Length: 417
Image 1 (cartoon, rainbow, N blue to C red):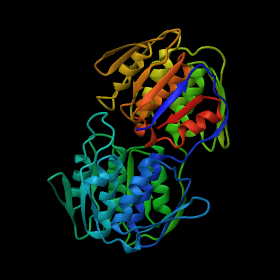
Image 2 (cartoon, rainbow, N blue to C red):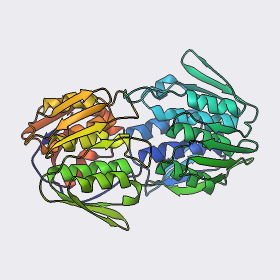
Image 3 (cartoon, one colour):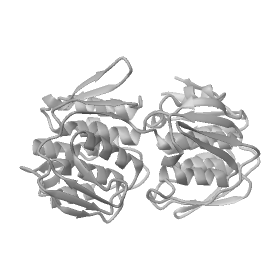
Image 4 (cartoon, rainbow, N blue to C red):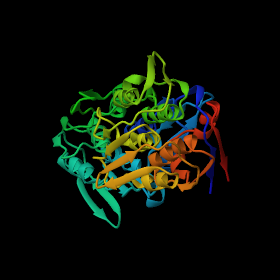
């Protein structure tokens, strides 16, 4: 099993390119199921989750091809098996996103209940209730969601909780439904907007993406299209935090400050100088960071996917910070590993109190989920001596070539087998 070895104490410096967003690429790849014509995608990140989803789609009859520029073409004209088996779904929660498109296109779907990171409950009942409101007959048997509908009907759907994948699943299903569907209390994330832009390029009628009310007027069929995946705002934020924690100066290409306002604001509060550019972001850190309090909440508030990285930053910052997690109830597992490096962290319910220390010391630590992995990498970059991170398969699910990119910025980091 692969591990990462990090020799800390080097400020990050230089320039690196940010990859396409995993959380945009996965639902957009599933959107290919809605059409018999090819969907061509560029800026697709090379990640384990992307590979897993390509294998899943291929098993359904989707033809997958790469061009010389690593663009991805998905042709679902030969779709023959609306079935997502447990073996393919167990490691990746986003696999639930095939449910809506399969049901809308084929009139039936059999999808295993998904897996993914163990960061708390993320129930799929909101997906099921929304599709039932659109006329689907759904039951859950032996760990599988079994759904049928002659043709989905437009409906008004209100979600008790803001759910990104729920919004995306229902939005895709509504594209081929008869009539108008309105999703209230919809997720507003940029990845939802990116999916909507792709669907509109395929011929869908969608209004309101990026607000809490999305209106979709169904059409009889969607066409093929070309679409470029948006930059990964969580990778962007992770590299910015890593540079700030190490006292570095970096420029990130192929991304935008507009997609992570809350993160940029907190980094400036920590003492970083950030410059937004047309095709990138520059950060310069002069002196040790200042502690920053934060509270996670749905977009456009501070993202839960950046909480762990900021905890690592606060570990070596001046002062005391309180981090409050409101999205997932089990998302402080990285705190125990950070304590192994010498961090001063106390957990009380959904809040963590982090007192900054002068120095972290390298040690062997274990990643527990995707973003926890990133926090341990950041801590390892600032710790004295060697840090060894185990279970980095979590990291490979969401960060493209992270050790290579950090090496480009001067980090002493390598992967060992």
